[in-house]
Each structure stands twice: as C-alpha cells, then as structure tokens.
Length: 572
Image 1 (cartoon, rainbow, N blue to C red):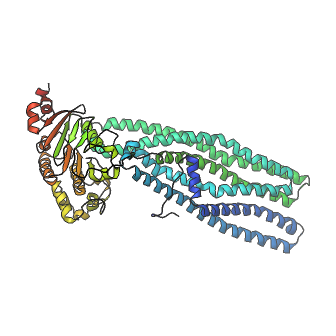
Image 2 (cartoon, helix red, strand yellow):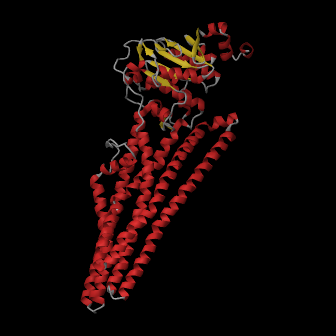
C-alpha cells in the first residue's frame, strides 16, 4: 500500500469513472491478483456441486465405496483450498481498498495545500470535511468490483458452460435469466446516483453550518442569535434527513432485489431441473449439480448488484473529489522580481498607499472594506495594485508570499504545542525560531502571561484552533506568530479587536516598537491603536476619504470622529 511519503501520482480528473479507473491503474499487480483470486474462488465454488454429482453418480448410486471416498476427499481438498483462497482474496481486496483510501486522502490534502489561501475562496469547509469523512470511504468501497466483480463474471460463464453439458435448456435459461435480473436492478442504480448526489450536496452545506456554529457559538449566544441559527440548522437537518430517507428507500429496493430475484430464479431453475430429472432427461446427480450450480450463482448475482450499488455511490463521491481537484490556485503569471528595497504598496481601487517603514492604520465603518484592501495589496484577489510602481500580479508569487504577510485575526491555529503553533514553519523562509526571537515576539504581542500561565510553557499542548485559550489569548497568539515570521511587509486585520483596553494599549505601543523601520499596516477603529499609527487612512465605502494622524483627523473629519470616538451627536 501507499505509504506516508510516497508520491500518490497525478489523478485523472476528467470524470468520476476515470478517477476510479486511475485508482485501479495505480496498483495493477494487486488489482490483477484480486481479480484472479476472486475468479478462482468463485469458480471453485461451482466445482463443489460438480464433485457432489460425481460422488453420487459414480459412488453412491452404484455402491462403489472407493469412488465415493475418492470424490469425497476431492470435495474436502477443494473446499479447504477454496477457504484459503477466500482469505487471500479478502486480504488482497482490503489492501486495494486501503490503497485507494490513502491515495485519495493524499491527493485531496495535497490539493488543499496547493490551493493555499485560495482554498477558502474556492470552496467551503463543509465540502472538504464531507470529502474527507464520507467520500473517501465510499470511493474505496467502490473498488470491490476489482475482485468479486470480475470473479462473478468468470463464475457466471463457468457455470453456464457446465450447464451446457447437463442440459442446453437449463443453460439457456441461466444465460438469459441472470442478465435479466441485472437489467431489472439497473434503473434503481441510476436513480440512486441522483438521490445520492443531492444527499452529498446537502450534507456538505450542513457540515459547513456545523463548523460555523462551533467557531462562533459563544459570539452568537452573546448577541442573542443562538435560537435563530439553531432554527435554521434544524430546518436544514430535517431536509437532509428527508433526503437520507429517499436514498435509503432506493437502497432498500436495490438490496431487496439483489437478494430476492436470484432466490426466485433459483426456485424456477430447480423446478425445471426436477421436471427434467423426473422425465429421465438428467440423472439424480445432475439434478443435485444443477441445484448447486444455481445456488452458487446466487453469490455472483448478489455481488453484481452489490458492485453496481457501490459503483453508483463511488462515482458520485469520485465526482465530488474530481470537482475539488479541478480547482486552481491563484494564477501566477508573474515574471518580475519584487522590489529590492522597501517600496510603496498602492491600491488604485481604494486610493490607499502604504508607505514603507511606517505604521499605517486603515479605519472604516465597514471592516470588510478595509480587509479587502489588504487582500488586494497582498495579492489574494485580482486587482491593479502595485508595489514600487510594478503591478503586483507581474511579480513572482513566491516572492510576494515571502515578503508580504496578511495576519488575519481569525487565522487557523492547528493542534500542537504552543511553540509549534507560534512557529509552524520552523526552519522555512525567514522565520526566526530562536528562543530570543520567540521571547521578543511574545513580549511584543503581550503574550508573555499566556506562556507563564501554562503548566509547560511553550511545550504546553494546544487544541485545534487553540480552543483551550480565551478569545483574547488566541488573538495575541496569532499576532505573536505573525511577528515571529518577521515579514518585510505585515498587513494585520483587526489585531486587537478581542482585547481589553489596557492590553490593547500595550499591544499598540509594543507593536510599533517591534516593527520600527518595517512596513506595517493594520485595520482598526480603536483609538488606542490609531493614536500610535504614523499615518491613518480613513475609508468611506471602501474609498480613501482622508489621510493624516489620528489627532488631525479627529479635529478635521466629523465622520472619522463619529466612527472612532463614538461621537453620535457629530455623526448626526
């Protein structure tokens, strides 16, 4: 099976069926072995009634005890060997499914890493979670067709050939009857694909809702919106349950027909064979053999139906994986180098210019407007932004990512020790990871007390998203991580929004000191932060309305004063 460090290969993303075939082609030896073992196992199942017929006709009926013992021993030997084949078949197919599972996980995780910052802008978290939790397992289960599916076809042809030697009439009935059963189940499999697709889509939406609730439940509760969101979640979950019932209804018909129709077919063939034996057209041993052959065929038919069921669900899951793998990261057509010295970042759409070596603050009544400006200046969204007069999209993207860092106040925090959380890219880029640098970053973000309050300091374990810390502590840890990265240009989105006034004032003062001489921009409406900024840019509807120091704008701009000083009378 594929290991943790093996290259999973390049998946075929031209469709769901092609993706499943790619998974088979990635392990040709194991797939062929599964098909051979499955075929041999099912063919030897058909050999059992043949040996029983020989034991009856050549041993039991004429009273030849030696022949009876010989055929009985052959029956025991074949049965024992077939039991071993069954174990090897199951073991091989388990490896086939696990390889497909791990390989799909690796290509999905690799694609998530490749998309990088574009991931959240191209698809929802619920979609990725649904793929990882459900679709990967479903795809692996679909590869059942490689072993038992191929074996069922071989066993069907083998039994048909054996029946020709007994009775052409019975052989004709079997050759025509088994495909008819599969055809009857076909429409239900097509319907299953449609209902399963809708179910998976609804599941992705609901999973995204769960993630949103988990991350913002405390805020929703504080704002009194918990019941409203709970009602919406209840309605969505009821729709998902109703769709699940529809999937279950189709699935129950598929499984019922997969068991019921072969059983009815067995009864018809047995009745026909009994009539032929009563008329003397076949022997008693051949009657037993016919019954055994048809009983053996119940297994292959059930496998066909099961494989069809698994393939229908697998194709739906594979299409979702393929749709995710087709997503492309932000296009990089840059061929020019980044400025060799600190330069101005300019966003023509808003009129904002971030001067090098200064602490600049962006204040807006709509935080999303100022955050969007930073997104454009960091090239996370297409724009006409320039850096040192050079269009930002003409600069090589790796250089932009290396020198310009956006520190989002809701950035993800992965599980691990606190030291790993604040320095996740140890040894990469220009990230300083020395104890002195870590201590300086923690001090600048006023996060010293967090480390001191934990039992093992930087070695203390953190939950995913650092949920074992308070909101303000998490925000300071995010700021510590950004400062420790020490980028040439730091663009921080609301870095102090969850802090109390005393801590916020300390952060504002220390941030300016820590970033002295480096280009830094923050979005905020806090007077404590704005007062420490070298330049404040006041935005109205996403456009630059005024520029100056905090004190100048308080004096000259009523709108700015109403925004940051909460001067309601002036705003009116």
